[in-house]
Image: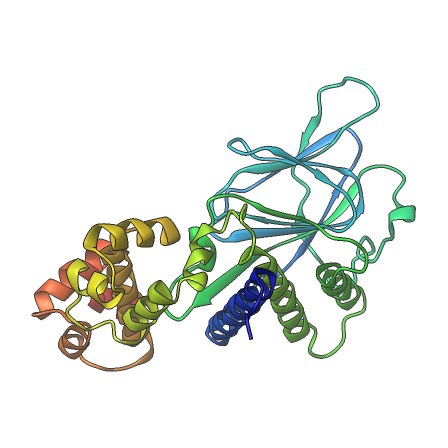
Length: 323
């Protein structure tokens, strides 16, 4: 029986989607998400709220009202109820609610830590005559020993979610949880944001216009395999030729594809994984520094100490003592 081109395309597309689902599931198995305390920003008409820069990625969700979000290096994004934004680590940005006249916006800094049960939380769009109510916070997402998932994010993620969107529903649950705290509220907030994050990943990993270009690794089994190998076996004697050979690519092709996906060279990636693993061992175990150095592929304790100090700005012994 001969298959038509349409049938072949559908089978290929289904197989590709199944592969993406498997790699995304594997990714999520190793994710650790830490949500910092949220704040409620109330921005009135004619005000301009300055935000950032922060060492973590910043998350915003518009509970009520309309306005705009702008970055110095990116476009301006319209905001409405249901808008969800993840701003890159270290980015300056501002929220504006224009006035009916041409007055210069008043600069404000009134984004305060949310008191659980704060009156602004839970307001509906009809309750806000002018201005916006925005749920804000920061999030650290770690994959294996990668320090911050969002360090690879070169541009903001902006999703305009409908009321029935899973992202909106999860954020609304966050709003209700904050408005009516109960035992386990903090754990519930983390779980709800994890739901939001996974929904965002589901969309970004298949989007051709995604700013999260490093997710291309999820669609490339060869890169995915070598990244897992580096993370699982950081002490192996890696070099560019060996990694390229394992991906069945030329040295040049592998270097370009890896840098395109992760925004850094493969050997810089190896170094970072080793240093994150070393920091974890130093802070959570009593294993001697010399043993850690050997486990991570360093020929001597002094070579390891030099690399660690260069990466973290502090010697291994002092790092262990302070942590």
